[in-house]
Length: 344
Image (cartoon, rainbow, N blue to C red):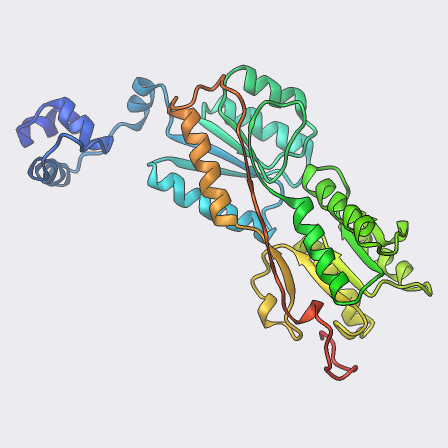
């Protein structure tokens, strides 16, 4: 026979509402002795709360959905860890989905999560499902965009200052004496990549660097090595380069290794991403680090504000912008190391 909350209350000698408060972790007006008594009784009776019944009563499922753009990306992994940690503290479950930057997969996941009646959604948006984003907002589904903005959609957003971070990175390379600086990103289809490119362009203009269209590469990952081969076949080669993210970096590193290019003597390098092995490379790698843990917790808190109605779901959108940190290492500094040393 299934043990009920009434059984727990009777054996513990308390009311059903007190047991309910205990199960929902509302301990404000509950003595330590009462908490211990209920905990012991639950263990003795092996009581399992009816999650479905609680959800129906509270009109919540205690579940949120997270749709990342690329699950293999280290940035996404760190953010998801922070989100999972935060929501566990809130006694919330997390459903993790991976869109692979595919608008159809993203659409399917959004519709599935809504059908499952999750309490809210955190999305790394492709930007290609605007009508669906707007529909979710209109229906008052708590929705938060992470890492990227989508113009015209009134949703809470957590991002970093991409343009300023790339400006500072370009400025650092210029201070090291570089005039020909290139940048490589994936296609300019999302706000973060667009902003990074804009930060680079502003730095080139304001710092008086060489302005060349071929120094601004934005293409699919599979095309990067051929674009690099074309770029370095000319006489006016860049002497420094900014990799738009971790995946772009891997292609650049492969090109550098295959062509035995000494870093930073022949090519100084900076990556926009938190690279866990950056300090282990020889030379060590300069990186633009994003505060992923802080971003994840901030996103979680903003979404919970909407879910718990501390902030109305029809209230104005909120945006939280974090600064990045340029961690300067050997790959972007002028060096006196032997010319034949390179990543291999």
